[in-house]
Length: 208
Image (cartoon, rainbow, N blue to C red):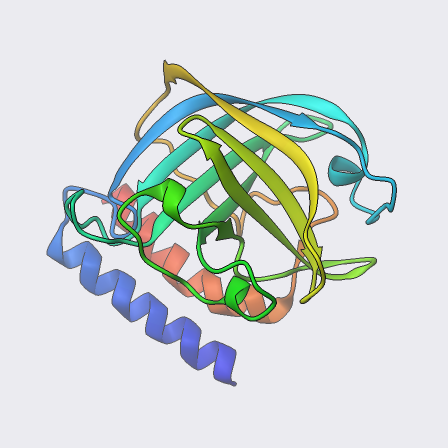
């Protein structure tokens, strides 16, 4: 019930933003899409998610953005979106936003002037064999991030390094974590109910 109400509220907010700026995305209107290299180390304690457990190298698309779209000097919620290839073709989208890093803070959105000033997490957990799992990222420089995972409020475990290139990609690419999922990182039904209404509004806005 609460997830449905929250989802409807987010959808109404997204619809209002779409009406206010019809020429751009309702959320994360300001951003840069680049190519990146993701190097996964492999985990000694498997999660049951093949993409996390195995070592490997992925060429990824990365979008760095400001959620509300406020001018650069002002604090904003920052976003880091990843599009990773999946076995059998296709791709999965992962969306992280600036939050805290503590057991409670990782579930709370925070604002800052620069993306590198705050850690980022997926905010909402994925359902996995080892329990509710979050992904997180912390900047190690302007073009480099360390990616970690945590189960619930547990400790963070680094699993990959993301390095950005200077190659710009299609700025109009849209990331959709509801439709494009990484195998093994399953969204809880309540997460889908929370997210889907606002993403449906965003999809209609883009088509318009």
